[in-house]
Amino acid sequence: MINQMQKKVLILALRAGELMMKSGAEIYRVEDTITRICKACRIPYVEVFATPTGIFLSLDEGSEESDMHTFIKRIKGSSIDLEKISRINHFSREFTTTDLSIESGLTILKDISNIKPYPLLLRIFGAALVSSFFALIFQGTIRDFFCALFAGAGSYVLSVMLDKIETNLFIRGFCCCAVATFIALGLFSAGLGTNLNSVIIGSIMIFLPGVAITNAIRDTLAGDMVSGMSKGIEAIIIAVSIASGVGIAIKIWTLLGGAF
Image 1 (cartoon, helix red, strand yellow):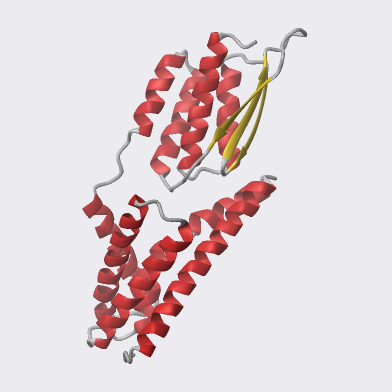
Image 2 (cartoon, one colour; image 1 turned 30 degrees about the vertical axis):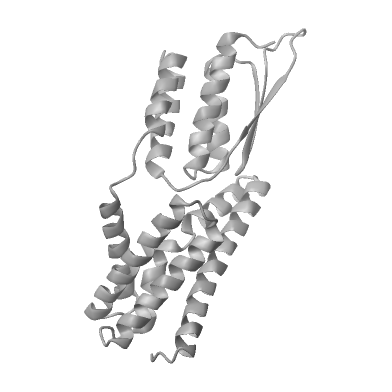
């Protein structure tokens, strides 16, 4: 049987892995963090297998009479929070190189978990700026810049609302990109824009699955085929939802007699 100290280490390691997984970290980084925390507490045998939806952790005291114990942590939902990943990385290095206690570690992880995101208005402003500058990159004019600014802000507000009711990634991507396209079409029809393509492309750039594609490639190269394939499929689903939202929005606009 594992003792109380090892049980606390287990809780600490699984909590760190859970936070990293929910923040969008790569699989190999999650497994390495859990292993380092357990090894730092002198648990002789540690084996970790992580997937995007769960963490499997086996540990053993190392004696001939001891039994191996396996624990499973279900992961529900994920997002992209690079600040949390960075802080947990810093915590794991500090925990393995100093005499930081387990209780202090749990407190630090609790504080990291309670980090609040940036204010909503600031996030909306950031999404709008990203959309507008991408419109310029795709040969848009200053008028297209402001059109993409409004389209990006409107679609991001919708994404925040959909996140609150916990919609799946396909519906969220479809609805947000459809709304962004409708806004772009409306502004273009009103004569406010000059290059419709640049406005639409710029406004949907904030929804592209860049992190999912990157993690899929990195996990695959690291040998985590299950995670790499699942992340790749997730990226494909998001890409299909984006294309479907834009295409159907344009089709509906055409059927309603809207002009380009």
